[in-house]
Length: 236
Image (cartoon, rainbow, N blue to C red; front, side):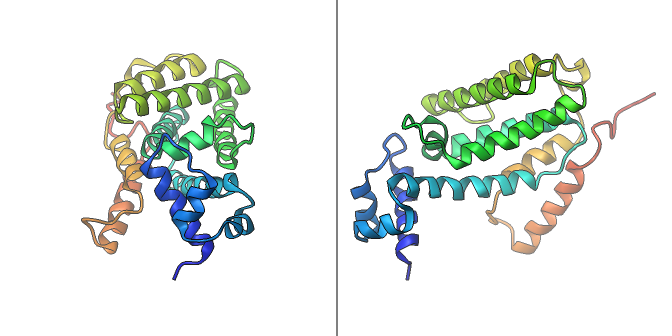
C-alpha cells in the first residue's frame, strides 16, 4: 500500500502527463491521490513543493542516464551530445520541463539550478581548452535560451527531438559559442557517435532484452562510445 507521500507523487505525475498544458490545482492533486489536504502540506509544504519533487525525481533519473554516457575526449562533440539529451528530456517530459523553465511565479526550480550548474561546468571545460569564442556566462545564457526555445517549439509543433530543427539550432549555437567546426568534424565517422546516441536513449527500459542482455549491450556500447574520435580514420 502506498504512503500518502507516494500517492501524491504518483497523482502529480499522472495529472501532469495527462494534461501537459495545465498545472493541477492543490485540490486536484490531493483528491487524485485520495488523501486530505493536510497530507500534502505535511509532506511538501504546498502544491509547488509537490510538483517540484516530481520534477526533481525525473531530472535526477535523466542526469544519471546522462552521466552514464562516456566522454569521447572531444569536448565539442560531448557538448553536442549533452544538447541532444537535454532536448530529448524536454520533449519526452513536456509538463515537467515547463515547470522547470516556464514558471512565472519567480520560484526557481531546483532541477533548473542543477541543469545550469551542469551546463556551466561543461562550458568551463570548453573555455579551459580554448574552445569558446565567447565568455562562459554569455555562452550559458545563449545555450539555455536556445534550448528552452527549441523544446517549446518542438512541443508546440509535435516534432521529434532529433529532427532538423534541433540539429539546426545546435549547429548555429555551437558555431556562435565555439566557432565553426572543421569540415571533417561536421559528419563524424565511425561507430562511436551512433553508440553514444543509442546508449543515451536506452534509459531504464529492458524490453525486448533480459537484464543480462541489457547489461552486456550497455557494456559493448560503452566500449564503442569511449573510442577516441580519430579511431578508424585514415591518417595517411
